[in-house]
Image (cartoon, rainbow, N blue to C red):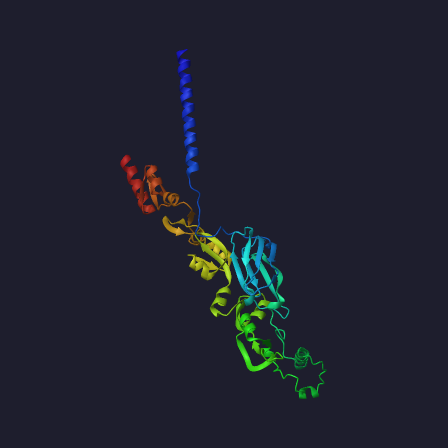
Length: 398
Protein backbone atom coordinates (compact mmCIF):
# COMPACT_ATOMS: atom_id res chain seq x y z
CA UNK A 1 0.00 0.00 0.00
CA UNK A 2 2.83 2.39 0.83
CA UNK A 3 4.36 1.62 -2.56
CA UNK A 4 1.14 2.49 -4.42
CA UNK A 5 0.80 5.71 -2.45
CA UNK A 6 4.35 6.70 -3.31
CA UNK A 7 3.74 6.03 -7.03
CA UNK A 8 0.60 8.15 -6.95
CA UNK A 9 2.48 11.10 -5.41
CA UNK A 10 5.20 10.82 -8.08
CA UNK A 11 2.58 10.89 -10.87
CA UNK A 12 0.96 14.01 -9.43
CA UNK A 13 4.30 15.82 -9.15
CA UNK A 14 5.26 14.79 -12.69
CA UNK A 15 1.93 16.09 -14.05
CA UNK A 16 2.41 19.47 -12.35
CA UNK A 17 5.90 19.80 -13.82
CA UNK A 18 4.64 19.10 -17.33
CA UNK A 19 1.90 21.74 -16.94
CA UNK A 20 4.39 24.33 -15.72
CA UNK A 21 6.70 23.64 -18.68
CA UNK A 22 3.84 23.99 -21.19
CA UNK A 23 2.69 27.26 -19.60
CA UNK A 24 6.24 28.62 -19.78
CA UNK A 25 6.63 27.70 -23.44
CA UNK A 26 3.28 29.30 -24.34
CA UNK A 27 4.14 32.51 -22.50
CA UNK A 28 7.55 32.72 -24.15
CA UNK A 29 6.04 32.26 -27.60
CA UNK A 30 3.41 34.94 -26.96
CA UNK A 31 6.08 37.34 -25.75
CA UNK A 32 8.05 37.17 -28.99
CA UNK A 33 7.65 40.43 -30.92
CA UNK A 34 6.24 40.32 -34.44
CA UNK A 35 8.68 41.27 -37.17
CA UNK A 36 7.73 44.64 -38.56
CA UNK A 37 9.23 46.99 -41.07
CA UNK A 38 7.79 50.46 -40.69
CA UNK A 39 10.41 52.05 -42.92
CA UNK A 40 9.17 50.41 -46.11
CA UNK A 41 5.82 49.74 -47.80
CA UNK A 42 4.12 46.33 -47.57
CA UNK A 43 5.55 43.35 -49.43
CA UNK A 44 5.15 43.27 -53.19
CA UNK A 45 2.45 41.09 -54.71
CA UNK A 46 1.71 40.72 -58.41
CA UNK A 47 -1.93 41.17 -59.44
CA UNK A 48 -3.39 38.93 -62.11
CA UNK A 49 -6.34 41.21 -62.96
CA UNK A 50 -6.54 44.98 -63.59
CA UNK A 51 -7.70 47.27 -60.76
CA UNK A 52 -11.35 48.13 -60.15
CA UNK A 53 -12.49 51.74 -59.57
CA UNK A 54 -15.49 51.32 -57.30
CA UNK A 55 -16.15 54.99 -56.44
CA UNK A 56 -15.16 58.22 -58.24
CA UNK A 57 -17.31 61.29 -57.55
CA UNK A 58 -16.96 65.01 -56.84
CA UNK A 59 -18.75 67.54 -54.69
CA UNK A 60 -19.72 70.12 -55.81
CA UNK A 61 -19.97 69.51 -59.53
CA UNK A 62 -20.27 73.27 -60.21
CA UNK A 63 -17.78 75.69 -58.63
CA UNK A 64 -19.56 78.96 -57.88
CA UNK A 65 -16.83 81.18 -56.37
CA UNK A 66 -13.24 81.91 -57.36
CA UNK A 67 -11.91 80.24 -54.19
CA UNK A 68 -14.23 77.22 -54.20
CA UNK A 69 -12.83 73.78 -54.98
CA UNK A 70 -14.11 70.25 -55.52
CA UNK A 71 -13.60 67.39 -53.09
CA UNK A 72 -13.10 64.09 -54.91
CA UNK A 73 -14.06 60.81 -53.26
CA UNK A 74 -12.50 57.56 -54.47
CA UNK A 75 -12.42 53.85 -53.72
CA UNK A 76 -10.12 51.59 -55.72
CA UNK A 77 -9.41 47.88 -55.39
CA UNK A 78 -6.25 46.10 -56.53
CA UNK A 79 -4.28 49.18 -57.68
CA UNK A 80 -0.58 49.60 -57.04
CA UNK A 81 -0.46 53.12 -58.48
CA UNK A 82 -3.21 55.77 -58.53
CA UNK A 83 -3.07 59.14 -60.32
CA UNK A 84 -5.77 61.82 -60.02
CA UNK A 85 -5.75 64.74 -62.47
CA UNK A 86 -7.93 67.84 -62.54
CA UNK A 87 -7.95 69.65 -65.87
CA UNK A 88 -4.60 68.07 -66.69
CA UNK A 89 -2.99 68.93 -63.35
CA UNK A 90 -2.06 66.16 -60.93
CA UNK A 91 -3.82 66.64 -57.58
CA UNK A 92 -2.91 63.34 -55.91
CA UNK A 93 -0.59 60.37 -56.47
CA UNK A 94 -0.66 57.17 -54.43
CA UNK A 95 1.87 54.34 -54.46
CA UNK A 96 0.28 51.17 -53.07
CA UNK A 97 2.65 48.18 -53.57
CA UNK A 98 0.41 45.78 -51.62
CA UNK A 99 -2.57 46.36 -53.94
CA UNK A 100 -4.88 46.69 -50.95
CA UNK A 101 -8.24 48.46 -51.39
CA UNK A 102 -7.84 52.21 -50.91
CA UNK A 103 -10.50 54.84 -50.26
CA UNK A 104 -10.35 58.49 -49.33
CA UNK A 105 -10.64 62.03 -50.65
CA UNK A 106 -8.55 64.51 -52.62
CA UNK A 107 -8.97 68.28 -52.77
CA UNK A 108 -9.02 69.97 -56.15
CA UNK A 109 -7.57 73.36 -57.07
CA UNK A 110 -9.35 76.71 -56.56
CA UNK A 111 -11.74 77.58 -59.37
CA UNK A 112 -9.68 80.65 -60.27
CA UNK A 113 -6.72 78.48 -61.32
CA UNK A 114 -8.57 75.85 -63.36
CA UNK A 115 -8.47 76.14 -67.18
CA UNK A 116 -11.77 75.32 -68.88
CA UNK A 117 -13.21 74.98 -72.35
CA UNK A 118 -15.47 77.60 -73.96
CA UNK A 119 -18.43 76.34 -71.95
CA UNK A 120 -16.61 76.59 -68.64
CA UNK A 121 -16.23 72.81 -68.31
CA UNK A 122 -13.20 70.76 -67.31
CA UNK A 123 -12.48 67.03 -66.94
CA UNK A 124 -11.15 65.21 -63.89
CA UNK A 125 -9.71 61.70 -64.22
CA UNK A 126 -8.52 58.89 -61.98
CA UNK A 127 -6.13 56.29 -63.41
CA UNK A 128 -5.49 53.08 -61.44
CA UNK A 129 -2.72 50.69 -62.50
CA UNK A 130 -1.06 47.41 -61.64
CA UNK A 131 1.10 44.99 -63.67
CA UNK A 132 -2.06 43.47 -65.21
CA UNK A 133 -3.23 46.78 -66.73
CA UNK A 134 -4.72 50.24 -66.16
CA UNK A 135 -8.27 51.54 -65.85
CA UNK A 136 -9.61 55.09 -65.95
CA UNK A 137 -12.73 56.97 -64.90
CA UNK A 138 -13.59 60.62 -65.49
CA UNK A 139 -15.93 63.34 -64.31
CA UNK A 140 -17.00 66.54 -66.06
CA UNK A 141 -17.24 69.57 -63.77
CA UNK A 142 -17.89 73.21 -64.60
CA UNK A 143 -17.55 76.77 -63.36
CA UNK A 144 -20.58 78.93 -62.60
CA UNK A 145 -21.51 81.34 -65.37
CA UNK A 146 -20.52 84.42 -63.39
CA UNK A 147 -16.95 83.06 -63.15
CA UNK A 148 -16.55 82.87 -66.92
CA UNK A 149 -15.00 85.78 -68.84
CA UNK A 150 -17.53 88.35 -70.01
CA UNK A 151 -17.66 89.49 -73.64
CA UNK A 152 -16.31 87.27 -76.42
CA UNK A 153 -16.04 83.64 -75.28
CA UNK A 154 -12.62 82.23 -74.49
CA UNK A 155 -11.04 81.06 -77.71
CA UNK A 156 -12.86 83.65 -79.87
CA UNK A 157 -10.94 84.51 -83.01
CA UNK A 158 -12.44 87.99 -83.08
CA UNK A 159 -15.07 87.49 -85.76
CA UNK A 160 -15.72 91.09 -86.84
CA UNK A 161 -19.37 90.74 -87.89
CA UNK A 162 -20.43 88.84 -84.76
CA UNK A 163 -18.66 91.19 -82.37
CA UNK A 164 -19.93 94.34 -84.11
CA UNK A 165 -23.51 93.06 -84.04
CA UNK A 166 -23.24 92.33 -80.33
CA UNK A 167 -21.68 95.75 -79.69
CA UNK A 168 -24.39 97.59 -81.71
CA UNK A 169 -27.16 95.72 -79.87
CA UNK A 170 -25.70 96.95 -76.57
CA UNK A 171 -25.91 100.56 -77.85
CA UNK A 172 -29.57 100.15 -78.85
CA UNK A 173 -28.86 100.46 -82.60
CA UNK A 174 -30.70 97.68 -84.43
CA UNK A 175 -28.94 97.50 -87.75
CA UNK A 176 -28.01 94.85 -90.24
CA UNK A 177 -24.35 95.05 -91.22
CA UNK A 178 -23.86 94.75 -94.97
CA UNK A 179 -20.53 93.09 -95.79
CA UNK A 180 -19.19 96.10 -97.73
CA UNK A 181 -20.68 99.25 -96.19
CA UNK A 182 -20.45 98.11 -92.53
CA UNK A 183 -16.93 99.41 -92.15
CA UNK A 184 -18.02 102.95 -93.03
CA UNK A 185 -20.65 103.21 -90.29
CA UNK A 186 -19.19 105.40 -87.51
CA UNK A 187 -21.19 103.51 -84.89
CA UNK A 188 -19.57 100.20 -85.75
CA UNK A 189 -16.50 99.12 -83.71
CA UNK A 190 -13.26 98.08 -85.33
CA UNK A 191 -12.14 95.10 -83.26
CA UNK A 192 -8.70 93.58 -83.70
CA UNK A 193 -8.89 90.02 -85.01
CA UNK A 194 -6.87 87.64 -82.82
CA UNK A 195 -4.57 85.35 -84.82
CA UNK A 196 -4.92 81.59 -84.46
CA UNK A 197 -1.70 81.36 -82.44
CA UNK A 198 -3.06 83.88 -79.95
CA UNK A 199 -6.79 83.30 -80.13
CA UNK A 200 -7.94 83.95 -76.54
CA UNK A 201 -9.75 87.30 -76.28
CA UNK A 202 -9.81 88.15 -72.56
CA UNK A 203 -9.95 91.02 -70.13
CA UNK A 204 -6.63 91.42 -68.28
CA UNK A 205 -8.20 90.42 -64.98
CA UNK A 206 -9.70 87.26 -66.41
CA UNK A 207 -6.43 86.45 -68.17
CA UNK A 208 -4.47 86.71 -64.92
CA UNK A 209 -7.04 84.58 -63.08
CA UNK A 210 -6.81 81.85 -65.73
CA UNK A 211 -3.01 81.93 -65.89
CA UNK A 212 -2.72 83.59 -69.33
CA UNK A 213 0.33 85.84 -69.14
CA UNK A 214 1.32 86.26 -72.81
CA UNK A 215 -0.55 89.18 -74.37
CA UNK A 216 0.03 89.22 -78.11
CA UNK A 217 -0.97 92.77 -79.03
CA UNK A 218 -1.92 96.10 -77.51
CA UNK A 219 -4.81 96.36 -79.95
CA UNK A 220 -8.20 95.55 -78.46
CA UNK A 221 -10.11 92.53 -79.70
CA UNK A 222 -13.25 93.77 -77.89
CA UNK A 223 -14.45 96.68 -75.73
CA UNK A 224 -17.73 97.76 -74.24
CA UNK A 225 -19.90 100.53 -75.83
CA UNK A 226 -18.88 102.99 -73.09
CA UNK A 227 -15.22 102.25 -73.77
CA UNK A 228 -14.56 101.51 -70.10
CA UNK A 229 -13.58 97.87 -70.43
CA UNK A 230 -11.07 96.34 -72.85
CA UNK A 231 -10.25 92.85 -74.07
CA UNK A 232 -6.93 91.77 -75.60
CA UNK A 233 -5.55 88.72 -77.40
CA UNK A 234 -3.68 86.18 -75.26
CA UNK A 235 -1.92 82.94 -76.02
CA UNK A 236 -2.24 79.95 -73.71
CA UNK A 237 0.90 79.54 -71.59
CA UNK A 238 3.22 76.69 -72.53
CA UNK A 239 4.84 74.39 -70.03
CA UNK A 240 6.13 70.84 -69.92
CA UNK A 241 3.98 67.75 -70.35
CA UNK A 242 4.81 64.18 -69.34
CA UNK A 243 2.82 61.63 -71.34
CA UNK A 244 3.72 58.07 -72.25
CA UNK A 245 7.06 58.51 -70.43
CA UNK A 246 8.09 61.37 -72.70
CA UNK A 247 8.43 65.06 -71.84
CA UNK A 248 7.42 67.67 -74.40
CA UNK A 249 6.72 71.40 -74.35
CA UNK A 250 3.06 72.19 -74.85
CA UNK A 251 0.03 73.90 -73.33
CA UNK A 252 -1.89 72.64 -70.34
CA UNK A 253 -5.05 71.97 -72.37
CA UNK A 254 -3.21 69.88 -74.97
CA UNK A 255 -1.48 67.95 -72.19
CA UNK A 256 -4.86 67.27 -70.55
CA UNK A 257 -6.20 65.86 -73.83
CA UNK A 258 -3.59 63.09 -73.73
CA UNK A 259 -3.99 62.52 -69.96
CA UNK A 260 -0.51 63.85 -69.26
CA UNK A 261 1.07 65.53 -66.26
CA UNK A 262 1.70 69.26 -66.92
CA UNK A 263 3.96 71.71 -65.13
CA UNK A 264 5.62 75.04 -65.81
CA UNK A 265 8.79 73.49 -64.38
CA UNK A 266 10.67 71.21 -66.77
CA UNK A 267 12.50 69.33 -63.99
CA UNK A 268 9.23 68.57 -62.22
CA UNK A 269 7.75 67.12 -65.41
CA UNK A 270 10.89 65.06 -65.99
CA UNK A 271 10.69 63.64 -62.48
CA UNK A 272 7.04 62.72 -63.00
CA UNK A 273 7.96 61.06 -66.29
CA UNK A 274 10.55 58.63 -64.98
CA UNK A 275 9.64 55.03 -65.81
CA UNK A 276 8.43 52.88 -62.95
CA UNK A 277 9.99 49.54 -62.26
CA UNK A 278 10.95 47.10 -59.52
CA UNK A 279 13.13 47.93 -56.51
CA UNK A 280 15.00 45.56 -54.19
CA UNK A 281 14.82 46.98 -50.67
CA UNK A 282 15.63 44.98 -47.53
CA UNK A 283 15.46 41.72 -49.50
CA UNK A 284 11.95 42.50 -50.75
CA UNK A 285 10.74 43.61 -54.18
CA UNK A 286 8.54 46.72 -54.47
CA UNK A 287 6.47 47.99 -57.41
CA UNK A 288 5.74 50.51 -58.88
CA UNK A 289 8.65 52.80 -58.03
CA UNK A 290 11.04 55.06 -59.97
CA UNK A 291 14.79 54.63 -59.93
CA UNK A 292 15.27 57.85 -57.95
CA UNK A 293 12.68 56.78 -55.37
CA UNK A 294 14.37 53.40 -55.02
CA UNK A 295 17.76 55.04 -54.46
CA UNK A 296 16.37 57.59 -51.99
CA UNK A 297 14.79 54.83 -49.88
CA UNK A 298 18.04 52.88 -49.73
CA UNK A 299 17.22 50.22 -52.32
CA UNK A 300 20.06 48.02 -53.51
CA UNK A 301 18.91 47.40 -57.08
CA UNK A 302 16.31 48.77 -59.53
CA UNK A 303 15.21 47.64 -62.97
CA UNK A 304 12.13 47.45 -65.19
CA UNK A 305 12.82 43.71 -65.47
CA UNK A 306 11.00 41.94 -62.66
CA UNK A 307 12.86 38.63 -63.02
CA UNK A 308 16.22 40.38 -62.84
CA UNK A 309 15.35 42.24 -59.64
CA UNK A 310 13.82 39.14 -58.04
CA UNK A 311 16.99 37.15 -58.75
CA UNK A 312 19.16 39.81 -57.13
CA UNK A 313 16.86 40.39 -54.19
CA UNK A 314 17.21 37.04 -52.47
CA UNK A 315 18.16 37.02 -48.77
CA UNK A 316 21.92 36.53 -48.23
CA UNK A 317 23.04 32.97 -47.67
CA UNK A 318 26.21 30.94 -47.61
CA UNK A 319 27.92 29.06 -50.44
CA UNK A 320 30.32 26.19 -49.93
CA UNK A 321 32.81 25.87 -52.81
CA UNK A 322 35.53 23.22 -52.53
CA UNK A 323 35.47 23.42 -48.77
CA UNK A 324 35.66 27.22 -48.79
CA UNK A 325 32.83 29.41 -47.43
CA UNK A 326 31.61 32.29 -49.59
CA UNK A 327 29.46 34.69 -47.53
CA UNK A 328 27.26 36.53 -48.27
CA UNK A 329 26.06 34.84 -51.42
CA UNK A 330 22.78 34.42 -53.27
CA UNK A 331 21.57 31.08 -54.56
CA UNK A 332 22.07 32.15 -58.18
CA UNK A 333 25.67 33.25 -57.46
CA UNK A 334 26.38 29.96 -55.69
CA UNK A 335 24.99 27.97 -58.61
CA UNK A 336 27.30 29.82 -60.99
CA UNK A 337 30.28 28.82 -58.78
CA UNK A 338 29.10 25.15 -58.73
CA UNK A 339 28.82 25.29 -54.96
CA UNK A 340 26.36 24.10 -52.34
CA UNK A 341 23.99 26.80 -51.04
CA UNK A 342 22.87 27.12 -47.41
CA UNK A 343 20.44 29.63 -45.96
CA UNK A 344 21.80 29.04 -42.45
CA UNK A 345 25.36 30.23 -41.83
CA UNK A 346 25.86 27.88 -38.89
CA UNK A 347 24.88 24.85 -40.95
CA UNK A 348 27.14 26.06 -43.73
CA UNK A 349 30.14 26.27 -41.39
CA UNK A 350 29.38 22.86 -39.95
CA UNK A 351 29.14 21.12 -43.31
CA UNK A 352 31.56 23.12 -45.43
CA UNK A 353 34.96 21.70 -44.49
CA UNK A 354 37.90 20.96 -46.72
CA UNK A 355 38.47 17.30 -47.55
CA UNK A 356 41.61 15.24 -47.13
CA UNK A 357 42.86 11.70 -47.76
CA UNK A 358 42.21 9.73 -44.64
CA UNK A 359 44.04 6.63 -43.46
CA UNK A 360 41.94 4.68 -40.98
CA UNK A 361 42.11 0.97 -40.11
CA UNK A 362 44.35 0.30 -43.07
CA UNK A 363 42.04 1.91 -45.60
CA UNK A 364 42.48 5.12 -47.61
CA UNK A 365 39.42 7.26 -48.44
CA UNK A 366 38.47 10.89 -48.97
CA UNK A 367 36.69 12.63 -46.08
CA UNK A 368 36.51 15.87 -44.11
CA UNK A 369 38.86 16.37 -41.20
CA UNK A 370 35.98 15.90 -38.75
CA UNK A 371 34.84 12.67 -40.44
CA UNK A 372 38.40 11.32 -40.50
CA UNK A 373 38.92 12.10 -36.81
CA UNK A 374 35.59 10.45 -35.93
CA UNK A 375 36.80 7.33 -37.80
CA UNK A 376 40.02 7.26 -35.76
CA UNK A 377 42.16 8.07 -38.76
CA UNK A 378 44.67 10.71 -39.84
CA UNK A 379 44.41 13.25 -42.68
CA UNK A 380 46.94 13.62 -45.51
CA UNK A 381 47.16 16.08 -48.41
CA UNK A 382 47.54 13.44 -51.13
CA UNK A 383 46.30 9.94 -51.71
CA UNK A 384 49.86 8.59 -52.01
CA UNK A 385 50.84 10.06 -48.63
CA UNK A 386 47.81 8.47 -46.99
CA UNK A 387 48.52 5.08 -48.64
CA UNK A 388 52.17 5.17 -47.53
CA UNK A 389 51.11 6.00 -43.96
CA UNK A 390 48.63 3.11 -43.95
CA UNK A 391 51.29 0.66 -45.20
CA UNK A 392 53.76 1.82 -42.55
CA UNK A 393 51.13 1.44 -39.87
CA UNK A 394 50.28 -2.08 -41.03
CA UNK A 395 53.98 -3.02 -41.00
CA UNK A 396 54.42 -1.71 -37.48
CA UNK A 397 51.36 -3.61 -36.25
CA UNK A 398 52.76 -6.86 -37.71
